[in-house]
Image 1 (cartoon, helix red, strand yellow):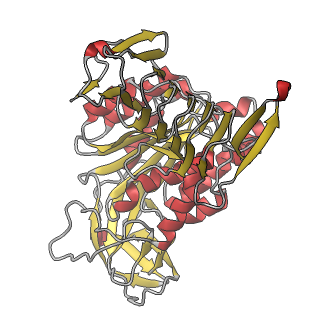
Image 2 (image 1 turned 45 degrees about the horizontal axis):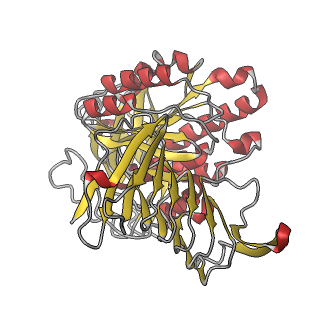
Length: 521
């Protein structure tokens, strides 16, 4: 028998820290994608009733104290929401942590310690009065730790195990452990699963390489309204390349008149496609009636200094402008990490509700990593559909300002990759940075414009976050003239080489934007 307590009766709205005190056994902590903490109590004789716990809320803290009626023993297992900090106190019980937390502090006497967390970005330190019986460190040789014995007053010695991350290293979590005689210490490097709604900026380079190389194979996401008789073989959606068994090339193209208004009535016959100078026949062109996959990436980092209310209001306004069948995802760059507020969904009411829960964010500005992660989260698997990434930002990646926490992906590397993205990129550039960082802001704007052009998108501007409301309707209007076109390349030797593609429209007065080509493989 066990007790499961979801804390429904405890006010946890503002809570950000969970404190667990268990003198009768061990404590296991798991960071999970859930809204409220969940506590499970286990005892050897089926112990587990509500009276075995004292649970109270104090400010931003939930305090859980184990008080078993028969005196124990009793182990406590806790699932905490992502972003919660945790504090644990035990005596003889083991303590374990799995997942990423912003801060954790463990105090114990003799229990074993096990920490599974992303040590690439976690500071760790364990201090004990005696060395543990056994120590197991992460298998990755790049993750290094030091062990030392520190002489204290009175002839005492402090044994310490700690990370070797540089002082200026970007970190997303801290774990501190104080112990007397820990039985064993086990550190395991943990990486978020695919479903984890938080990604770390240092994951972006590996993701970009996997997009390029096309590691792994999964079926192509279904494209809407394909013409009868158009056969599309299996495609590797983890890349912007076309494999040797693919014969259909897909391009996303924006069409406007000379004044910038969208042109929405073009057909496949109106498009003229040339690949490496050879004219190809367009077999499909879908526009206004085809649903869109829209990613809204909000840069809520320290450089942008965004105010929550106008940002949320503008984002809601954009969602309300979308078509009923358009799928929208909302991501945020905040607290130095990439956060999935909502994955692609056509449930716009759900999106509006989730925006209401958007917290006040801050942190560093690894923008290029965030753009990489935003594309790689879902859109890469939707080749042949109408895809767009809308990035609201001041563009001040710390690569430009040469401050702490620059993107791991270099701008030129992202620019090259964007040429093969199956999505248009529409930066909404916030000009507010120009008032106090004019030199950096100029370069930021130039780089955002280049990124948009490489993907076939365009740059929009807003004076500040308070002036976003009139910009999003402009973006929505632009999207009405975006087409997904497809053709069968004449050159069927897919050897991985770059193929230059030029898209024109036979109708006079129509201007088109598209990426410049793709790697045929």
